[in-house]
Structure formats: structure tokens, C-alpha cells
Image (cartoon, rainbow, N blue to C red; front, side):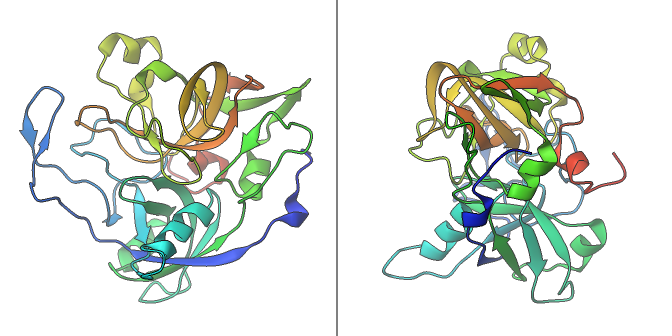
Length: 296
């Protein structure tokens, strides 16, 4: 068992409502090859795309699996302060409970956060998805912000429920931790989200436009919910390139056609000094780890 500061963490309520899909002023996305395309994107209840499904191959751009949540409360003192709290305080593995509508009482699990649109993503069973409606409110019991690994001060943990950390079963290797991942990714192909000054919300994207790199690193079979390691990436205080650093995150949305974008990754672990050892495990996906599905 890893020693943590679990007994010092605060569990607090945040709430969001099921967000509608949205389009910008133009309904077109322009592909990296210059082709205008009209595709499903962020928001909504995605009935046939969940964690455990492929992140690539869909006729889609930035589609979010399961249910997308946002808080529309607008406090004039803080702008969108309530939605920021929903995004920062929610952690991967948190319990989410539907509190209004036909699916009232149904429970799901937070699986990621999507920056830019600022959505929290929740996986629910199929029968719950069929009962949900846009605008239904979902309570998240936010727990995990401030989590520390007491014996590994050079590894920072973020965006993660302590129960999910326990389920991942990281292994001690001297002063390092071995963490199971499905893929190892070079920082050179990371795109949108790079340069953000914090990693406690949002994500950043794996660009998949270079065929040779995709094949070299086996990225065509990325799945939503996969845990992946990003080499030479330090997420301690934002997202930067740092040689020797290692970060581990979870894939949160589908591939994209837009330049600079691709499957998004929300950070879970980072070490600026390389104290994380990625270990390949094809089953290292939240759908398998937390037994969210029986059909994969």
C-alpha cells in the first residue's frame, strides 16, 4: 500500500448539468489537409461511444464519451466560478449521481476533463444513458485534490480519486514507481493544451497526423480511457517539454481532424525527474480497471 495523505483530503459536492452539443459560428471544421468537414463534436449524451471504445476511426472531432457536464451558474464576482470548481475539484474515479430527471439516483464515474470547452466527463451504464436528458443535474462527490504520495515527493498526483489510485496498483521500484500504461508517447507529438499554466483541469492532445510516428508507437489502437505515458513531458506546474520527465494521463476524448489536435489526455501523475517507470499493459484502461463494462 502506498502511503498517502488520504486522511487529510476534503470530500466536497460539485454539480453540473448534462451539456448540449454545440457548434461555433461556422458549422465546418477544417482538416489538417484543408478539407471542410461537418462532424459531431463536444457535449451531449454519447450513446455509442464510451470509455473502452476506440479513440480513433470515428466520423467525429473531439467527441466526448458518455456524458458531458458543465455548470452554467454565473457568479459575477468570479465569472464562471462554479464551472471552474466543477472542473478543478472533480477527479477521475469520483462517484457521480444523477439528482434530477428520469434517471434520478443512477450512479456513474468521472473519467476525465476536457479543456477549452471545460467539461467534466462521466461514464454511466447504457440503461442510464437512455433515461438521461440534456439539462439533468448530476452531483459529483469531489475527492482527491491535494492527494500526495508521501514516500515519493518527486512524483505529483493530480485529478485522481484515491480509490482509483489504489485500483491502479502502482509498484515500488526503489525511489521510483512502476505504472501500467497501454502506450508510451513522445512529447514531440503533443499539441493543443501545451503551455497551460496548470494541469488540475483540462487536457492536451496527441497529434496523430504523422503516419510513421503513429506506427512506431502503435497509436492507431488507442482507446478512450487508456492510461498512457508521455515521455519528456513535465506537468508539475503546467505542461512543458523537459527531457527525462515522465507524465501519465488518461485518454478523454476522440481523435480530431483539426491541426494541432487529437485524442486528449488528462494528467494523473507527473515527475520532472523521471521517477515514473511506464510498464506496458494492454488492459490498463479505466473501463477494465473499474469494471465499468462487461463487453470489452
